[in-house]
Image (cartoon, rainbow, N blue to C red; front, side, top):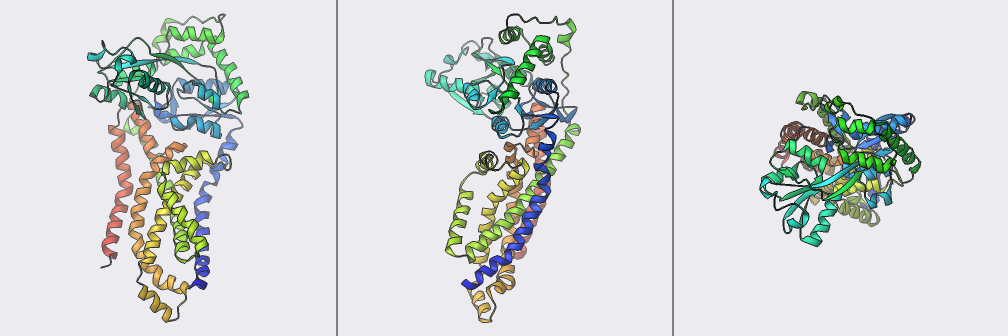
Amino acid sequence: MDNERPQVLRQLAPLARLGLILCIVPMISCTRAPQDAQHATLRWGGDAEGGAPFVEADPADPSQVRGFDVEIASMIAHGLGRDPVFVQAAWSSLEASVERGDFAVALSGLEDRPELRERHAVSLPYFEFREVLAVRPADSARFRKLSDLANHKVATLGATMAYQLLLDAQRSAGVIPVSYDDDIHPYSDLVAGRVDAVLLDHIIANRSLRRTPGFVVQPQPIATGHYVAVFARADSALRDSADVILRARMRDGSLEKTFRKWNVWDPSQAAHFARVVGPSIIFPRILPGMQAASVTRPRGTIVAYLPSFLRAAAITLVLSCLAMALAVIIGILVAAGRVYGPTVVRVPLTIYVEVMRGTPLLLQLFVIYYGLSSVVRLPAFLAAVIGLGLNYAAYESEIYRAALMAIPRVQLEAARTLGLSERQILRLVRGPQALRLALAPMTNDFVALLKDSSLVSVITVVELTKQAAIYATNIGSWVVPGILCSLIYLVFSLPLSRYARRLERKWSIA
């Protein structure tokens, strides 16, 4: 039997090579597009899920974005003689993505912080915001500052200046911080009574008040902060050029006009501009009609967003199919190596399986995309395929190994008695029966992978769930986007689930 093991492994090698080629060839163009486009464009990153007035999908054409950060990116690009190109990225990953080189500059309400300046090249502060408390009307008299909220829950976004303020207040005053991943649910939970206050930027608070009435914003700010553009640490020359452009736009009134257009200009911004540019700054006279010429706020309709949903659904389906193909190929090789290989092969394969099954998929995606960027810089889509494929290959290999080991030993001994080689036994006796046992759980795994593909939005891939989140931010509700997203996932997964159950009934072994 030991002499036949290398033959079995060699028989599976062509299948592995063919599968890898089929997975990689469709994505070769992904590695070239950014390099070809960088000559006359400025790639900038933002998160449309953050919503207006920072960056949002245009309700009239969700394939485009708008917001004051979008206009600032255009000012910087045009000042450099380039055209702006938007790259969608998760807000929490913007800083890592700009350092990795996915885009040249990140703009999406990024807050100026000491640790940010240590790791990246940061522009001059182009906007001053205030951290404000939102409370229920009945609590407006007693909850005016953080020290009033001892032993009470205060919600905010994680990894923000507000969250750090709450951590400091927890140590000094006993405040209980509650971290959220979005800025919609903190305010809805405040109105519902699940938290006692929300601490966030005054822009976000005022926007949420229009969406979710039922709370009040305290007029006295807790702290002030600034929004900045973030560049890679080694790209300080580009940062310096952007600073020159931003100062010029402060002087000629372009930035003021943009902020007025999005209804975020107030006297504190004029004072901030004077501090940045200098006391000699002369603001142009703003005509009376300019303040009224604010951006219209049409609510996005399902028809307008349907093309974006369909594109995201296609990305999800293609990504899942390629990742599953990779998982099947690697899973077969790993299972064969663990069943037929020598100890020197089985031990590392076992370690691989346990590591991939024992660590979170999200962590694996971060390591492949960001952690290995200094060694190999994979396109986001390819990194997503590899990350999902390697993770699910570990589970697939266990299915195949269990199926191979489930074949009764008496059948194998009978085949050897008849003079069949291990290669013939695998092809004629063991393989067909193992396939019958493995096919139904394989189908279930594909359904699970289809849903787990929603995690790849953290590495700048805009798949179905991320598109639904962008839509939900635009309209301020998850009801319609959630239903539409669920229906598309059900269209994909229900036929596969039914097929898996049919196989289980048809091929069940008593």
